[in-house]
Length: 449
Ligand code: BGC
Image (cartoon, rainbow, N blue to C red; front, side):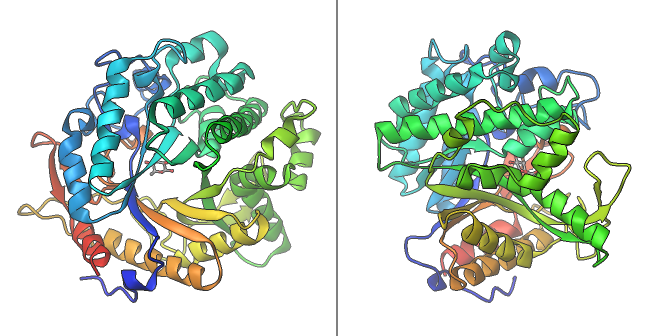
């Protein structure tokens, strides 16, 4: 058993303890019961996009096994669950024409969660854009999507807002833009352009702000935020060039998506760098004031630290050095201090808002042996990051909750099913049987402490 140096009693009574998932990664039943195709339905079909050639057609079959999965949550002892709504499942055509079967699915899920005393934290967008919006408008490349996303947010609120009081507009705008338009490593993934990527990022921030405005108008009490990729960046050594590279990396990964929402300004140095190369997004008058939207909380998705090295062969003059600390199999450094320092930085620089860690977890290959999975690395990773949460609280951060990524092994985007993140093992050779791992039992023990 992992030696946790803290117990649940050390945390505030109203702290949210949860786990997180996302629709395409767990639901399966893609195209079933009136669900329309999303950009991921299309992307996975292109040759060579997914490492093991798989897709999310079945995933964890959560769409059919949601009751069993809620029992797992209850058994684990969490008081919160973060999941996302699949846009094309509820509005297959964008915003008009709702798909009642899709709405019913989420109604049942939300009702059952509440019955079990588990608070739903709902992500409106975890990468599943209806394909029809991609075809019609080029998706996030177009400003049209800003109002459409606002309409969608409002519709979600009208359907579920009587029971859902915590909303997350977007999951990781960094990944939605740059992973697709710079790396071609995520849907839609058909165009490569740095300028377009930053344009998409600009539209994402505006869409977030539009959703915040709409929801706040409907219910001033509802809490709404955004989940940002949060990477703790340090220079590989004290060489001034590497220090400059780290500054650039930090602006690229983190500040570009935090700062404008808190101050109405993009990070100056990176913005200037983009302008010099004609890569800067087109910003219309009034955009930056809109982006400064006054949302309620930051969702922090934290996994690891990155070490920056000056590198003139790269478009942004930085690359990532080899990790030096103990790592997960995906070469993610296990560095809870990076979480603490990231939280403090966000707290101090970006408006002292409430903060939820909306994702934190560890990849592993995980071997099923005699019906058991001994995922010691993951269990230790979670324990050390929970200790980090306590440290951040003691240092004054308004931390309100912690969500492990993920409840169960799921479709890991371009990695397919080659790596696992779950507290619960999904046995893909045995009818997707759910098998709680050691990390599940350790987290359960902590939650009961
Ligand atoms: C994403 C998840 C993903 C996880 C692990 C997060 O950044 O939100 O969808 O599964 O990383 O890669």
